[in-house]
Length: 122
Image (cartoon, rainbow, N blue to C red; front, top):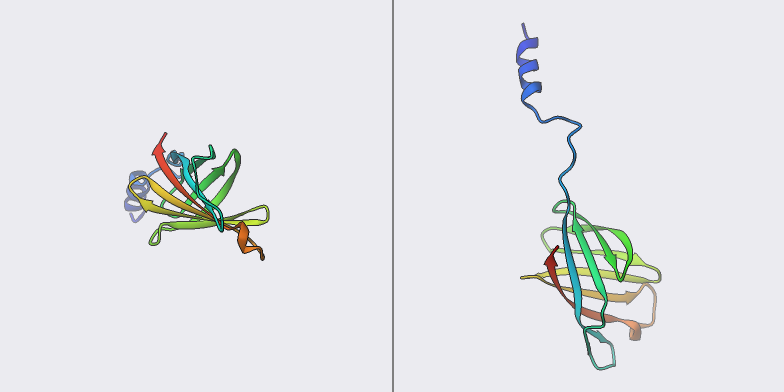
């Protein structure tokens, strides 16, 4: 009669084939972009879409390119990905804001850019 408790436990468990929850999607826009050695400029029109699949994974689309998988450090609220010859480092700073640091993968520090973003749920 050990089968009955197992059957009861399995019937109470959620179905294995259940659909995963829908991602939480946010639209972000660049409020200001600052490149090393140059004046900052306001809103360059770049749009970023961020779709959280859970606390440690997201997909990010930058300027219509992507989506790229983004592994998030939930404690530091940051993640990074490669986009061509640059490394994109994304950090949620709180209250709908984020920073994005764009650096060349190798050399040429003068191409480094910091972007300030504002994000809102879709």
